[in-house]
Length: 495
Image: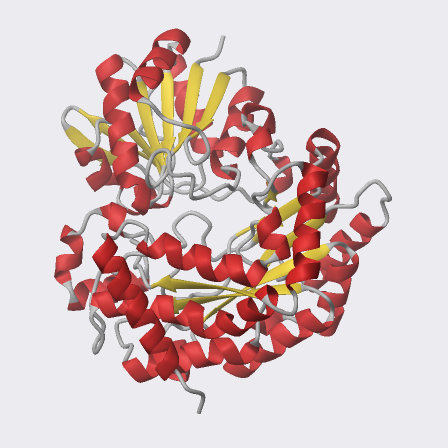
């Protein structure tokens, strides 16, 4: 007969709409459950409004047997609140938790939240097996990847097995999402990353890489574009450009089909790029590559075990730009070993490589990582900080030389230092053609959001990122931080 299932994706804060990417994790789980006869709904609170009375009414109307909650460390409090609301509405509803944080701390999470189960690692098969056991009233001690409460204790079963044949999975349940609210489609072509950067949690995706076949990927792209016409896709893999042979086959399938005219972007490492890859990417519709450079200081680069060089970073940006592909460079500021000199080196290097766009994140340790263990050893008080503070914008510890509040000032100054020249050019000699482009795009698709980023990318990058960081400060604090930003940026002379 099947069970009634409600799957929820949790935001850092309700009604804040920070992340507009499709929640592929629960969308894949939903497809697997539907395939086996269960009735499934999805609510993505990253893009949908939340009001407690409305949520209670929806629970009463739908009457789910199961509520599955997917969350990150930074959305822990949202997940805890939702779990409590579900159990208060009906204690008989089984609450299942999943995601990176629950995988890292299954026992602690179950003791703290009003929930019944944690799915550790990949969720498709374990969730389906759990529902079958509950429906048929069978035992659950042999279900791999499951942690649960029983007789007042928290028990943990054997680790789950990785899904080797990703082609065997049904495409994500797009039909259960409000697709009109996502400006970009999201497609996952592989799972896992072979590298061991100290800040990355491999608890779900692991270091073992499993790839879908080029034909299977092509069929998903074709199906997605025929149904939703987004014309823009984000390949969300940890490392989409890893396998050169597979890439060439994917590119050939895309370029060989006249029906596919979409643009796409992805993340990449700087040490895996060459002219052949970027030329094939450009021809198949690549509009941007996001490079995880992380730091422009050699000592920090060695500390995080990136296994890449600054020279490779500079070359990668140049190769992509020369091929006509936009670049975004991601940096992290505030490692435990960071000194003022290291951070300044990193910001100067960011400007030197001349990427099109930038993101500067404050180092925020994630559970189940080497970075977390190192910071915990130095700052044991980190365990007392609320999980909602681990959001890559709020510093959680002092470095060896830099105070937390000064890390925020460095991030603000970094944006100003690397983007000021680009923003000034957009607002002066480039203003008229860019304004006309904005007007044309706005008339064409009847929206301003998104078009501003296309017409004035550096301005939006600079002002939006800095505003996001200081928006919750009091007026006097905002002024002080802005003053500090200009002072720091002005002192960031090259050399």
